[in-house]
Image 1 (tube, one colour):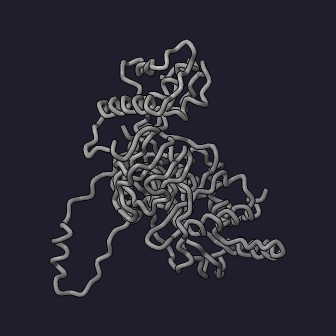
Image 2 (cartoon, one colour):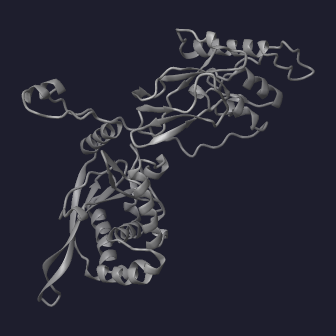
Image 3 (cartoon, helix red, strand yellow):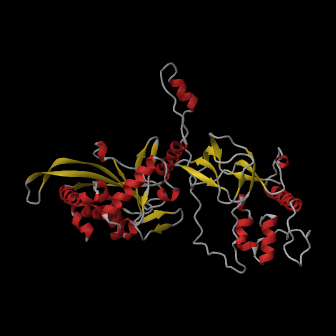
Length: 443
């Protein structure tokens, strides 16, 4: 029986996507690793690869179709000996479906004249029966995969399948070695939190009725805007935010930045104030390691590296690319990496691993003239620093004299489940000290 190709989950937050473009057509031969389609997720457009070999029998979803749910069949793959006529109008489901598929695959192999695997095995010997795990549950594998496993003496219970619904396919057993111990899991991942439902409000029709007769344009929500709405609603409903505010004098940093940029001009490097802020936060997380943590549902994960996310505004939404091991990188390296991430974020070309993770985030609206604001924590981060503009203000010096200084207001939003008030204050104090004494960051 033909194999269904399902809509993949290309990111942890993806629940549905847009099939932007098919890269194959019906009748094309494909192998494992071949590109099948371009899928538009809530964050980016990504290429989807085949996990098995065969012939594209039918494309079930048209190009440009939006709102395709994850695990929805999008195409049908035919194995050797099968034809488009084998594609039924009704598809079985669950175990019965896969059992029927196994029989069809075995029949297809016979029709194609599959050679006998060993001299000691009769040519018409059926594939070994599907094994079960230690709980007695069936392990799904294609007939060809079971035959290869039997020849090589492989234990299918120790092999992770890459086919639909975790089914073990030919590619999974070809490279496996007999007696190889399964890879030890790094720890059971906590289930993703289910976003809390938004408070009940007026329906879309009721709101539209309020503006009947008024001129307006209706803007359809894309995947990114839907995700932003869901995650920020979740954040404000489930994360107990508290806020810490400080003013930072920037005069020493601005002078030091000017000197560095003059020396780096020949290398084409120009450091921004934001580069210093990233470095200051990364070093502060090292100085206050208990604050370098994230909320994981029923536990707290304390990170050792400083992986700092930075909010980047793009058309229709924003990304938070992550600069990993930021405490180890020079200012010029951070500057170059941030420029590259921001550029690809605006083109929606970031891979999921480039905008997922991190323990702390920075949101800088100073370039828009915003003096100060409160940022919403991006779960599972423990905190986010909202950065305002540096402006000239009168200040009182240590000797009691009035002076004029460039002052930047920042607000640290903190998840109280992860970081208590005193710990948050220590973290913010360290950030302030790093920025007001910038040469210390190079020590």
